[in-house]
Image (cartoon, rainbow, N blue to C red; front, side, top):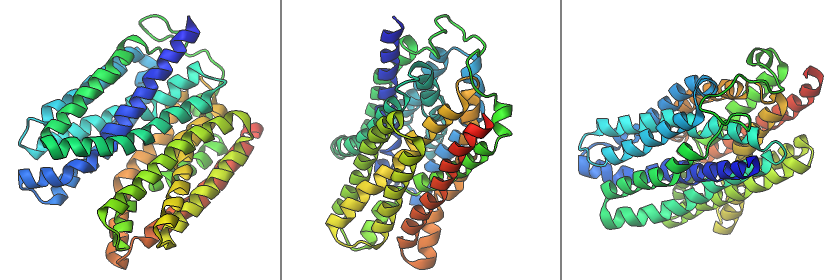
Length: 395
């Protein structure tokens, strides 16, 4: 019975990766031009929605770790799905930009409750032996969803308008995720009742984790890779700035997402079988080479190849770090510890999202932004490897 439940929980997490991350979060940019045109607003006001998304993520991260320990995960995730999907449907009927700010604020608040805190916590409780693989598949689906839904929803938007496309996304989110949230999810195998019981599992307390050297090394790595994640969307602008049309720019971005999808699945499988430090070091080298290559490459084929490598590197942030957190600190207060890593990253994401534009305004090129992303892997990899080495001494 527990094994069957575990696979239903895994399916629910896959649906969140595919629809919430792949569809809702990764297709946000599709709506900007049409919204600005219909609402007669400058692009600055429309793209400000992403600041509300990041601000919501910060708010959600503050409370997510505690709420997961105090409330039934079905209630918490069900309300998050209803709030995010319902806000999209309601916003599609609005003629005021304030409604869209509110929508993205709500989606941002729900993101830790459904993705960044929930997924590594719940999968870690149910899949201790295959944690790397299941994390990799879930986050890999987010990359596949991003590549696929950008095309599908772009066609829907072109045929029926952005309001209908937004309404369809909200409806798909509710239909695809709500049944799993309400009927499948349980926080851990021991929780088969309405409320969670106090944690009795092995592992570190939040206080113990904060007092360790490994905690601050992981935090430094997480902040470096947050910058990479925040500036990932600048790839399309960089390719366009090289003189290629929007089709090539979008294709390179899709290649990065596909590389991320394959990278998540492969790194997850390798983390379950091979020494963690060696896997992290190898994928960091791939990510570094990918971003340095994108910075200097001019031929399309080389840009595609470097995009794949850059996507592989991104798998460290999505799958590698949560895996390392779990293996280091265990089950005891993992949701709180995970939130401690996510909170500074959420703050940094609010400010770093505009860093690429600032660099471009001063240099006239996105090349230095791509180089910066490569340098972030040079910072993150030694921090993660050193944190793993400290774990044995501190544990």
